[in-house]
Length: 328
Length: 304
Image 1 (cartoon, rainbow over the protein chains, first blue to last red):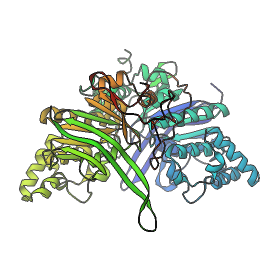
Image 2 (image 1 turned 45 degrees about the vertical axis):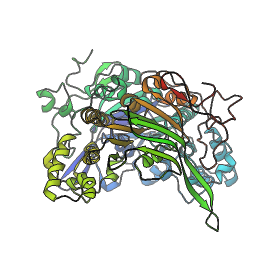
Image 3 (image 1 turned 120 degrees about the horizontal axis):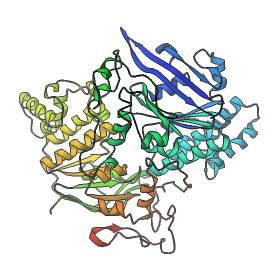
Image 4 (image 1 turned 135 degrees about the horizontal axis):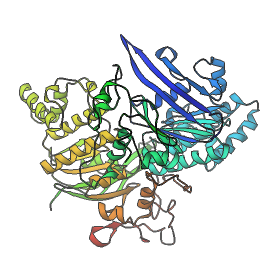
């Protein structure tokens, strides 16, 4: 697509030091987001999708983690070496973040209007009344009826869907070029989820912002993301254009994930559960991290990590020793 | 088929605010005339979004909450148990697994420790856990394993009916599949009746024989899973099914609709769904009744 990506995570390995060892949370993760693109990161709990987002924003507690290799470049800024002032300038204006639970993201003691004015004025040299005008415009763009009245409300007075739309309005307050949304609709009902994601999608397209959409829901990825990264136990196992990855999945884990849903089999017949659980990330795993649960695993899978990013089709890559055998 | 448990025209209202003399001034109308029946060995799904009253329904079924009016029918003496949504908060972190699992039995009839431990070992085996883990504590298990412990506890009182209140919504899909498989196997083996309360359309469609779709404390559509999902008649059911994101249908281009749920403090007059309904027309200002079509397919809409 465009020349310089808004976010480029290259071969990132990250660990959390523990007593007498470390938890290897991310291993050789490469994610790239071009301007205006909606990129999904999908995986089950513990796969490292949130850690990736938090690391990209430098939001992890500084002394609690160690980057052992790789680089993160966001809007031309090297995030691993950036100082506190650079980070503050970037967060909230160049890049904004939307979290899962809107009630904890909004200060319960502040009225919506005051909160929005503060966020806008933190990054723009404008007066209070001008910021109010802008805030009302943002609420209107999120289809919030009677924005004037909502400005005077406290977060607890609003419904979950309304709160999440306000969080999105805030995220777009300072014309970001990248919005990181970590499970933005997991706490919401499906009809509200559709509204919130449709608004997020429309807003991002309007202002040309890229979105990193982190979710565990393959359906959400399918409907809203242009491309997708599938993560398992801290590694990207497959990535590519959404339609290619979800309709012709090549990695055994992606396939298993798609097959495990109740839609995949006839009613009441046994579901294709993935046996076992996540490997213990405190241990050094010499082979493929999915080998313990994989039906195709052989000695090579258990002995050595599969090469990262083998091409399956243009832009569609996977990390599996049996990539050749998986081609149909 | 005899009904294992049922509700007849149940209303539940909660006081929200009182005046200076203690009289109730504002009420939340959680259930507004719900009638259901579950036969032995069958599964009824309750489908609805947050605030529709599905968890209140679970509390009424288990006897934790008396209905404001209406009747609970069927056998309720220790023959009903419940599996809750979040096994992290439904299991006491300070109790060993054998105590958690056998607590319902112990409360009914104090039994000797050794007998309870043996019973717990059997139950753990029954739900696919290792019987020698009876002395472990909940934090030593994964989320899926904890939900298995909750199921073992529900089985311990030898119930006829188990209420499953969002049993898999805190779990990943691969683990959800394990739990649903376990529940279906247990049902086939023990002839249990299930009431599955969920917001997840795919889970209800897979798991249930019949489904009741709830909106604002009322059942708006009810029938066999095959008919309701193949041919949804109520506009709300259609909205709900349509909103589920699908895999492989390409990028979404959805029109925006009005999605605010009306408050249950003052119930709408007429049809509860009319302010969000794409089919609203003359006649919707009158209260709608749940009326029958072919094969027990009930719909609360005069335009269906």
